[in-house]
Image: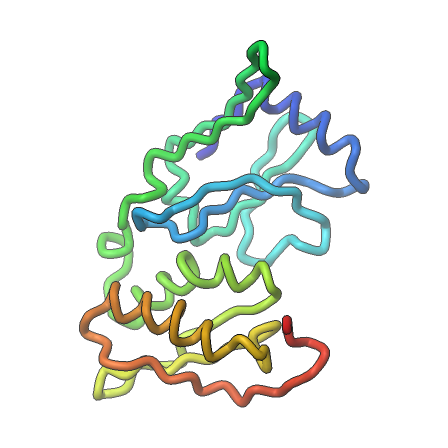
Amino acid sequence: MINISNKAQNYFVSLLSKEPIGTQIRVFIINPGTQNAECGVAYCAKDEVEKNDIKLNYNNFFVYVNRSITSFLKNSEIDLIVDNLGSQLTFKTPYAKKNILKNTVSSLQERIEEFLNTNINPQLLMHGGKVNLIKISKNKIALIQFSGGCNGCSMIGITLKETVEKKILSFFPEIKQVIDQTDHLHGNHSFY
């Protein structure tokens, strides 16, 4: 799935040797399947491994990838380019911007769930939050529920209108409205 050159693998091992024991690498894509797709590499501490992750084995380290983005990582490559100015990791993902959702999932409910998992939740997870689709009403209203750091967050209104609702309505024109069904509880768990 991800071809990591020997130079890049050695570089990762060197970087990880300076981190707490058990730290590995995470590969992610924000907004996969869109023209705004952004790929990245980050450290992944032991407690940041998620149940939806798959673990890829390399020489002396692991790479964690959320299962929902694996098809976007087809034929991807990570390399280390060294020149007179220094070194730089390159990450090539030829399928990151391809909208593959229509080919892989059939029902509207499944397509929206997949869309939330690949396009919205990676951003929300950075703040400890998540959004799930509860159901789609007969009137084509998407009922959603926030959890984790999004529950009770003071920014939830903006997240709902400017991120979740705007993206769902633009990608799924058959949906007429998005309604938040979360019973928001304010407290220490909230991001803001």
